Image (cartoon, rainbow, N blue to C red; front, side, top):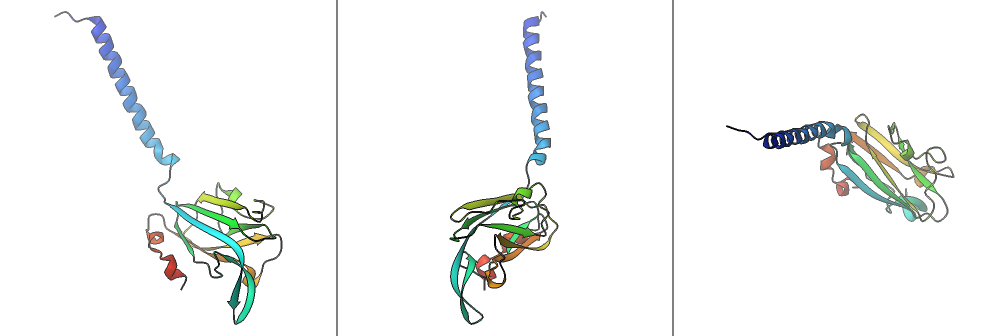
Amino acid sequence: AVVSTQSTGSSLKYVVQLLSTIMISIILLLLLPLFSHGGKVREFDWTVQRSVEVVAGRTLVVMTSNHEIKVAPVHVENGDTLSIRVRNHLPDMGITVHWHGFLMRDAQEYDGVLGLTQCAIAPGEEFLYEWVVDENPGTYWWHLHSGIPITGHDMVRGFLVVHAEGSGHADHVNYEDAMD
């Protein structure tokens, strides 16, 4: 039988292209975990403002988050993306949010230390804190920073609980019940 070299050349070229495509696909699948994380995006929306509240039997004007003095704990799993939009509705002071105990690996710009790692969120402005949580499981806390000392009832703060990656614990938090 006579075989055309032209047909053999195009078949070989096709096989080489096919193998190249398969090799590239395998390499991309192997590299994919390096560029993505398996965690969920945990989104929160906080508005900081002054509210009139009764605290320990006294009527006070205090800073609140979403009109609450008692802020529900934030629950995340290690590897989740934490996404918190903070709106500053205070008329006369800039603020930041600092995450106590968090090392903020590869996310120092979100550490919230006023004047050191972040400029203040000006009155009427908002800022999106968004990073992948890379911390040991445990209970941490967050609080506001501002240009003046904030203490007592004026200190907006809350807990941030990090659960082990893949534990599913952060998925079973009822934030309405957590406030009771």
